[in-house]
Length: 144
Image 1 (cartoon, rainbow, N blue to C red):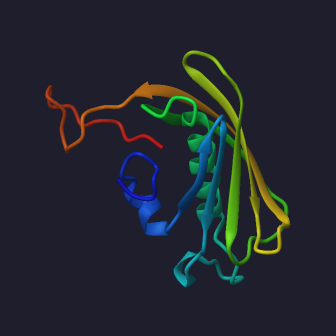
Image 2: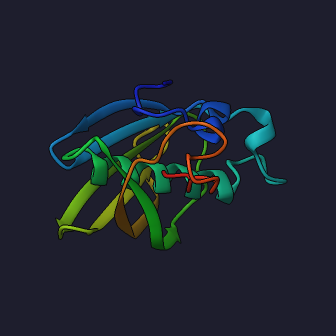
């Protein structure tokens, strides 16, 4: 396990996300983009920002039932201004059913300005066995 996410997520580890809040339908993740995470305008690449929002929303969805995994079904993203410097993602579980979570995330820059927003729908799934293959030979689904 790394970064307190409860499971090893290699891409999240690579990006350097740090989970700072994971409870009661809320999450917070900090992210200091590295030079290789920037675009040609020297601001955080949109794909990295979207990954931060996806993981932030997934963490909010899982925070009430950490033993479950979630997979992204749908995500809508709005970029309001360039995301520069240390970024903080704050996620909220807006509503859930037994199998579906409805979430949102806001990304704030180093000066506390909102720079991106997303809503997302996630499906709760049982965690699958660790390792390259499960007992029946099927490669497990990765979860957020």
